[in-house]
Length: 254
Image 1 (cartoon, rainbow, N blue to C red):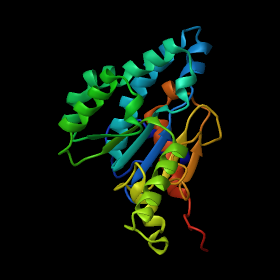
Image 2: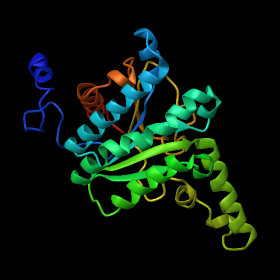
Image 3: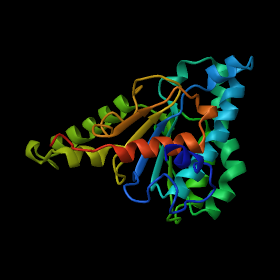
């Protein structure tokens, strides 16, 4: 039975007999896309080649998430800590959103995908930000999968800014201490209006959150794989979804 189920993983459209159940689909999947550099190193290639191949994986997994009926897909594209990398690599990474959207935006629009971004815009190059903002505007009325890029994003900075915003409202007497609750905090985060992730996937064998959505991931299911991001396929994504569907989410209860 198991072999027959896995044999069906490569189908191009979701069928009633697919191993991924139509029910209990995670509404929001977040992915830490890790291992591009190591993938390239293993093949004797420059790190930039790994990042370029990783861009192809973004396309694959976006289309597969949409096919399966996932509503939100958040991809950790560039962290606030990634600025510490060599300038040549950072410059290359900053060009990838522009390249990706130049190639894929028409297909994203055709598939009713809505592009969003969460992160700190002030440090991004103008060509990176303008490409992302153009995609956001052109897909704003789409009602399908929300493709949310975490770009120049750091969870600690996000939470600090939320706390400062709340503190300012208290200082200006727009809020009282008794008004502050989890909903008030969530509304000040960059994910305001989005559900928390049901499932976090991290590739490349690393077992940490790396300053990613630390408030929002409080009750998310975590799934780790040794597979490097450029190799991450639709089958791996389905495997993560099926593992999520086997788990019982109790949120601290019985």
